[in-house]
Amino acid sequence: MTVSDFRPFLIRALTVARTEIAALTALFVAAIGVMTFVEIADDMTEADGQAFDHQVLALLRPYADDPGRPWGPWWLKEAAADITSLGGISVLGLFALIVIVFLLSQRKWLSSVLLALGLIGGVMLSEGLKAVFERERPPQALQAVETINASFPSGHALLATVFYLSVAVMLTRAFPRQRFKIFVLGVGILMALLVGLTRIYLGAHWATDVFAGWAVGSAWAMVLWLVAYGIARWQKRHQAPLQDEPSPMEPETGDDPTKV
Image 1 (cartoon, rainbow, N blue to C red):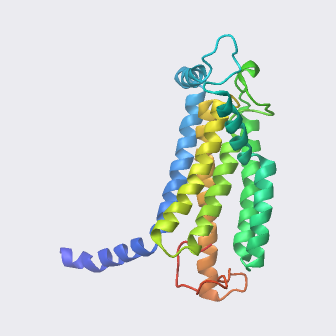
Image 2 (spheres, one colour):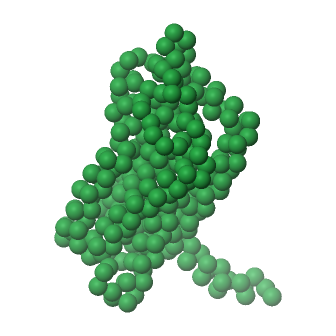
């Protein structure tokens, strides 16, 4: 068998790879997220992982006379407290309601349902994993904010990643230029990162709690996108009535892999 015999197969494989690059990327991110969470969960129970968490917390609590005061000026703590609320269930629930109402007004039935299910599923994932691992939070004397339930994984980091990343992916369809798509995705990722970092800074979570929250949140967001992508492709082929219709301000494009 010569190389020419493989040429049709290679051409077909490259064509599929180009058209399905977004789906392959989402699948890759989901797999990496799951594997990262498993690795962190394993390290969390070992001495090295616990030592890392304590070292990070000690670096952020340098004041012996006031152990609950985080490193930096007073306004940094206030800013962190404000930013961390952007990952709370109340704030995310309000944001989600606003986005869902907007999506429904634009006849984005599929996107609105999946966003609601995504946030509900994220809460279930967070609470379920917390119940399984039952990890204690950092010492209360070192916490700069009030906390409830278990520590691992960080619910704020998980839910912020699911919500902001999902909304960012949805918004990429509204911008035809690549740089705007990159900007929107960058903002979504930045929001999730800031929420997680503030949880560490405020002593509400160990560092590995937040890393695990990011990993699970990214995986769940990508699973939601893959579901939306698969449904949209199936609906387009069968002309199903539940397919999201294009916004009035934009023409309907072809088979856009970013469409949810």
